[in-house]
Image (cartoon, rainbow, N blue to C red):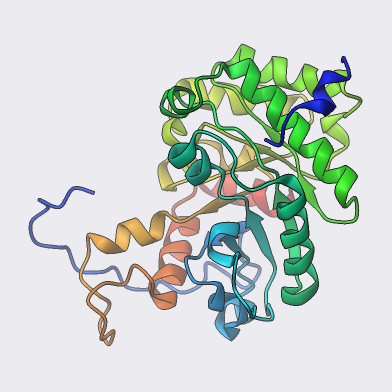
Length: 294
């Protein structure tokens, strides 16, 4: 690939009536819990230090937008991954307002001060139509910028666990993105895990399943961003890992759990853990076993 790759700029419905009762916590599926790598999305960075997540082996996913600017950081008791906050950045500004230098510096701080950091998502560029309208760029432009981000961040701090991301919309787009990485000297089959972007809103559709099946069959270990229950039921056996904040939206449409004093469980650790347990229990048994050995 030409050197220009490295020179790119761094780039609820309020009418819902009565809320349903919150579901009871079913407890863990079994002592060897399904995959340790189903990251639970967390709004509050303080959750990283809560003992119940470590005790139950639940890894968390926290966004850079929630961590940046904090004078003090929690010390993690459980594994976690850093989400770059890319969808928020591009939907609000049509570009990245955080430079790669600032992001790499922040990720290094999180790694050193919080600890237990499994992976850091790069500053990728989503390819949904609404984001393309915001940026005024093409899918190809977004793919090039996503790959440039991975290379830039590796150059800035190659000791951090950067997560390369595949972007696109159609299957051909994603295959082209694999090829673009390859032309830049990056064999994605050698990466520990690779994020797949721009599928979370259509994750249970036939097209999204076909995309994930194809990429998985190529030997690429995939991380699914923002996967919900329906999506995981379709492709959990094909993913190396995933993350989800869907529990919080789910909680806004239900009554608080018995014993909870807050008006909504949308920021409730007990609700989040119960939702994750129910989600894992709902996966077909063959997918649960496959995920265990992945």
